[in-house]
Amino acid sequence: MPFSEPDLAPLLDTLARSAAERDKEDGHAAAQKQALADAGLLGLSIPERFGGDELPWSRLLQVVRTVARDDSALAHLLAFHHLQVATLLIYGTQEQQARWLEPTVRLRQWWGNAVNPRDERLRAIASPEGYRLEGEKRYCSGTLGSACMTVSARDADGAIVLGVVATAQHGITVREDWDAIGQRQTDSGSHFDAVRLARADVLRAPDTPPSVRHTVRTCLGQLILVNLYAGLAEGALAEARSLMAEGGIPTDAAVRAPLLGRLGDGHVRAVTATVMADRAGAQFDVLWQAGEAVVPQHRAEAAVAIAEAKVVAHRASLHLGEALFDIGGARATRGALGLDRFWRNARTHTLHDPLDQKLAALGRWSLEGEFPPGFYQ
Image 1 (cartoon, rainbow, N blue to C red):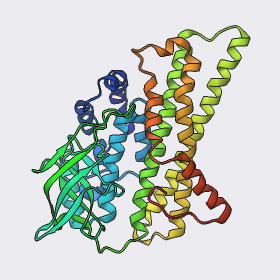
Image 2 (image 1 turned 90 degrees about the vertical axis):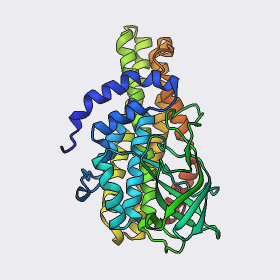
Image 3 (image 1 turned 90 degrees about the horizontal axis):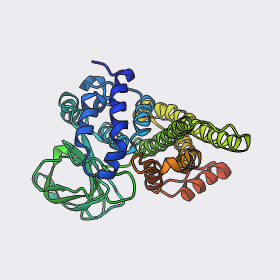
């Protein structure tokens, strides 16, 4: 059955009711992940030829943003599932795509992430069958409970090997060791002990020449963060409005005007983040549709739009995560509400790559018209 957004309403309501308590409990959100799978959200990015919905990325990320309003950790897992699908679509052959994506739709399987090229501890040791993976990998979002994962490792010469492995195979240990103040229930690191990466499942061998198309994955990863931050801003704003309605709007003009001003300021920040996210999403759609014909200039222009949106959404999520307490007053600090999770989640995730570096990159673009190369651009 084709996906339609109205089908999400009951699911989102259920997630919202349990979000604060699950944030306190931490652990693995197995039941909630299953609910997302049962709602048909795992096939949204998968091409129709493999049984998926093949939504435009801009539309899919609006769904991610909607989930992030109530639970940015689950939205994070959902988005990173689709980032791994995109990895296979960018790097994989038709045969690899069919072999891994058809069961993803049919069996409603989750993908996990073990791609972090800056973490060089995982080694890919050449073997007659392909490679043997040995070592550790941090920041493996969503790997616990997944059926398969994309993984990056370094060969003997330090070159990157990218591939796909089944998560349940012997030698893979997925840990629940994420202990940051926010984005709880996203699991984390993995250990690989003599894990077989078959030659048929290698997406990028060390001697693969780089292409502009390959860098589109980085743009998508950054656009995902934009929508997570924008969703957090929208969610915090909604909580602020609820608190104001619950407590009643003061009649004293000296109190009423500043509160309404804070709410209005938050509204403008959240709306701006959303508009910028959608603008960047539309440019990314064009970039994605270009396929192998993508050129550096178009990639740079999309990356700039994403970076601009990321700065705005970054600031909006942090501001609203704090402002909801100014608007809601002392009642906003009730432990049962768990409203501090909006700021904690935003603060944790916005440290993914420094804002100062993003602004400096935009400054170079504005001044010189040249977007600097880099993994996080």
